[in-house]
Image 1 (cartoon, rainbow, N blue to C red):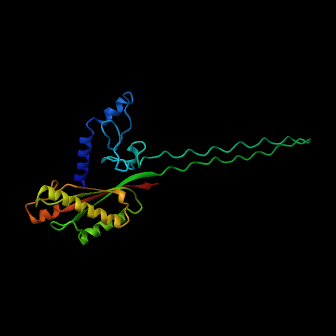
Image 2 (image 1 turned 30 degrees about the vertical axis):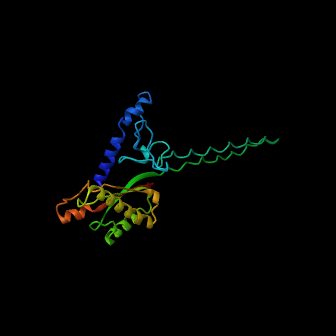
Image 3 (image 1 turned 90 degrees about the vertical axis):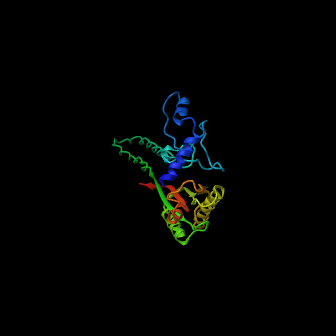
Length: 235
């Protein structure tokens, strides 16, 4: 999946023509702000998906580097409850002098330690027959195992990137690579994954991982690369 992260970094670099740190420093009087690993436009606006629900993240994103107001941002723990009111003053002593009983002091509750989130990623490849976008049985088995691994994880996003071999025209292969990515998405959704958590794109024949001059190499290039990103609570 190193190639997928590299593609994401190149895409982010092209979009941010003005360095993020320079932009932030100009608006904070020269002080260095915290690192933000959500993708942003040149005016500093955080990029969001089509429904404005989720912010796009680069390959270095963690909850600690999320832009304020974006999904996944770490929230400060709630303040501890106020201490109990002081006990009432003791009653006046009776006629006969007597030592008042000491007032009991209620213990101050201690706020529990906040849980820590750790980032987790899973990856898988799904392969296809020549000129097909139908998942093979072995590809379905790999994807089902991938879904099982996400149980107990706060799922953030699943990215599926489709690819083809070099046989055929560029335009045709581009459409075929998208169809393969969409086939993976449909299978994941059928296994209970939220539809809006799965993003797809196609790369056509532009990113081979093997030599297209051999049958074995072409079979390796007919694929969808799948990456799962989420967080797990660690106490």
